Length: 368
Image (cartoon, rainbow, N blue to C red):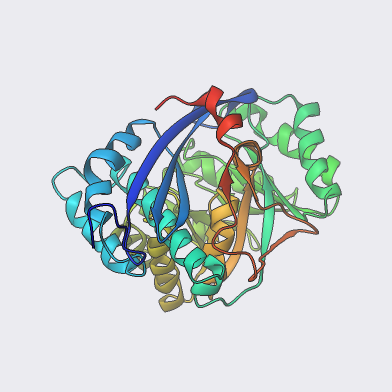
């Protein structure tokens, strides 16, 4: 090969960019307020094709990709996604993998899977064990910053789209929580109602809230206490009303985190975020842990990638169809996946993830 030649079987380059998009209105949950969403996008090139991956994280992750991870995967065989993943884990040892490091790794891993699938002329979903060709979704948003009218309008919008389960935020103003849940239930009729406290409550607040919410048919209580309190989650799981699942896990970055949560019996359904937990490779490993514990897994947000990852999970519950991420992905990517009749259907004939960055549309939001 000459210096100008590119090995069609190896990664030629890794390019990273970051974008911050304002939300359509101020948002908050039980523990945080925000008015923008940042996404770090990775494009991996090789074999005459480009693979795309991303993570919802701070723009600082882009520097980690450029400085630490890109040199590790450049020149490696495109098909060796597992070896590339392990090499990136090793490269992050002294930097710290949980948190920003894992988010950066996730974006690169997703792009590598996309590139491999594109070159094999199949979908990412088809490269997984592919237990499912359609992924159930639930509508998610219902921020504590919304008025009751705004809350009802958003939840009803999902129900009218055929999405039979919807989720709202609680916990910022505990004295208002029950009234907001009552307003949501009156609007959505018989649809399943989920609530998410984002770890805002104490154990006793959470127990009292679970009892109150049961009368409104709440079937999903997410992070009633901080996800670091495994004993507290187990207490809630043991004492919550029948028919109400306790769930957590979206802030997991590595397998030991998920293993500890499952071994503690802390959740009825585990959550994992493909853009945090190590990409497609990490998400499938979390799915295997769930299989070993006969516990369902629910995907946290990032629907255009998560749907493909969910295809490879045997004990799959559903995917969070999160308001902010649906909006961002439709703005930034051609080919973003959308739900219809309560599911996202996967097309095996569409190479890779089927996504392309809208470079011109994205440019005004670029921060790195």
